[in-house]
Image 1 (cartoon, rainbow, N blue to C red):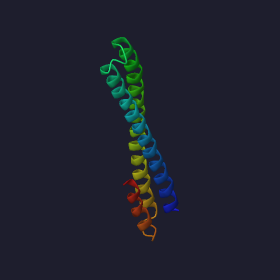
Image 2: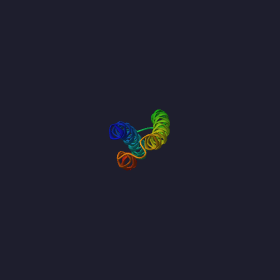
Image 3: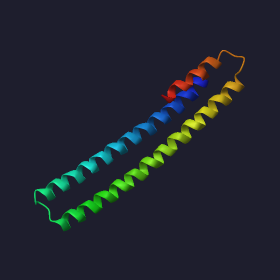
Image 4: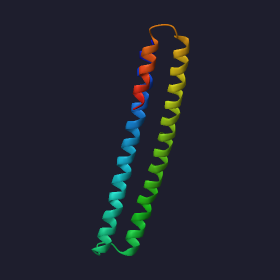
Length: 111
């Protein structure tokens, strides 16, 4: 029972970590786009006005992505905290039984 609960928590933590990684990849691509805009401007393929217009749009997307990352990181921290609290509660409930070892190993899911 404990190991099943731990697996569910572990899956939720892993899913959130993957979501954060995807958002960071998105942010990196947007930053690459900004760098290309600067390059195009330096090569005189963009006017200053075109550069400013395009840059503002991408910077807004980056800011939004950063907010999403922060929200996911907060969710991850909260999930880990709840997992740790649930693990402690399960350890107390099942103290004296052979299941303690299963609950204790659940901490490995955090890393």
